[in-house]
Length: 213
Ligand SMILES: Nc1ncnc2c1ncn2[C@@H]1O[C@H](COP(=O)(O)OP(=O)(O)O)[C@@H](O)[C@H]1O
Ligand SMILES: [Mg+2]
Image (cartoon, rainbow, N blue to C red):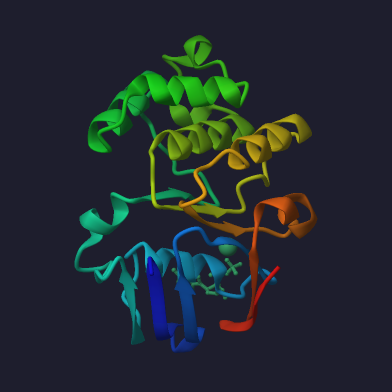
């Protein structure tokens, strides 16, 4: 298995935000994760990525503790955050940085961007944070897909995309290697129904539903 969370509990200011969460993600799982705002979805993802220590229980990614082996763990995961980070680098600089640090080819990022209808050549010298919300999202998607990962995590990836952008995105997803596991946090199950084989529903920090579909 790729990811395992065992009895994971995480508190913020004394309040349980994750409450005894047990989830296993296997190669090839395509998961839609749903639940109301504040359910703990983003916190769970950030814990899997090693951004947070948990208060109880344990998380393993490929057998590794994601906090202690963050670099190793992140090597095989592509993650698109809910809010794009406020990166000051220009598009050119960002792509060159990402390509070097994740040892992938710049060309692949440009190719994936084109598939998302994002013309990077036109915006090369612009700082990332000055792109529109949807353009940022498209570039992050292109980077995530260019990096051949074992696990793709998307935290509400289509929230800022126009309808055509969404369509392109879903089309690209339908072509991802079947062995790659995907975790989508989304409020739009209807849109990704054909792309997932499992749904997980969270509420108040607990997994209240986890079933194959
Ligand atoms: N860094 C933080 N510090 C304090 N509270 C936080 C922090 N991150 C998230 N929370 C709280 O944890 C709860 C779950 O948040 P989150 O995981 O973002 O929910 P979701 O992604 O399901 O909407 C919310 O009540 C939120 O306010
Ligand atoms: Mg969230």
